[in-house]
Length: 313
View 1 (cartoon, rainbow, N blue to C red):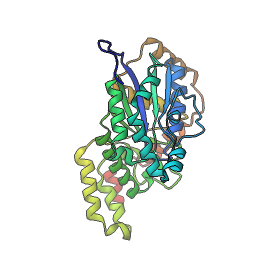
View 2 (view 1 turned 90 degrees about the vertical axis):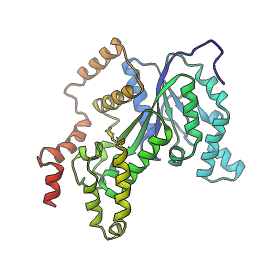
View 3 (view 1 turned 30 degrees about the vertical axis):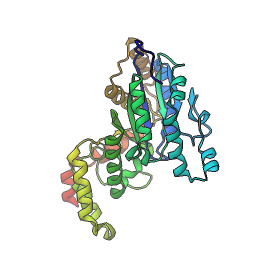
């Protein structure tokens, strides 16, 4: 499983893409693969989800060659959750298979498309141990944790997202970038109570508690919510980068945060390709404009700080 003695493998950079089901992990991997390829990076996508079928991207390494969720559920009479846990434990026990597959790709940038089961990243150890082994193989990885942006429209769900994000950051033990995905759909489930920066920078969460107190159901749990908010703010680790995967500027924002986290430095060629890509896009009708429009509606039109907005309430 380990490299030969005396031979130090070269550094390999990449992202492990994690997050709850439906947060857009596979779509992100497809979009990021295409985006990085245009920049000149040689990209390898590794599917680590044994339940992922009909992959939309070109997959160089696929865990389904080792184990599939359907086979485990049928053979061991397990449900989808227990079956997925078993699959990842099986992958951890067969890391020599993964190493042999990864060795076939040198001088590449890696995208690991991971399963969506939340407990794999909050307290179960198999995925964490796989990430640790990748680090021993000289991979420098950033965990990209995707969260559906529409949770911002519901204070209770947003607090839950903050707790899950914090727990994941502490458990996975990798450089970490939290991403609010599907920004073009952020208002689909309701208008935001505050400007977008309040959610991306995770500002004073006591204002969210006041919104929750207006709901008779959550009013009973105010003390519990206060303690949850205190934990998130005391750590001071959670923040988010907004993402619309269909927009280049939005992808650049996320990529720069990821590269900064794992120490990847690109050369002059990639910088020139990036500038050419953005120059060619001048005047295009980007969907990112709609994302900026969301923020402008909450910042420029009101011209008010969070404190002023609370006074109006």
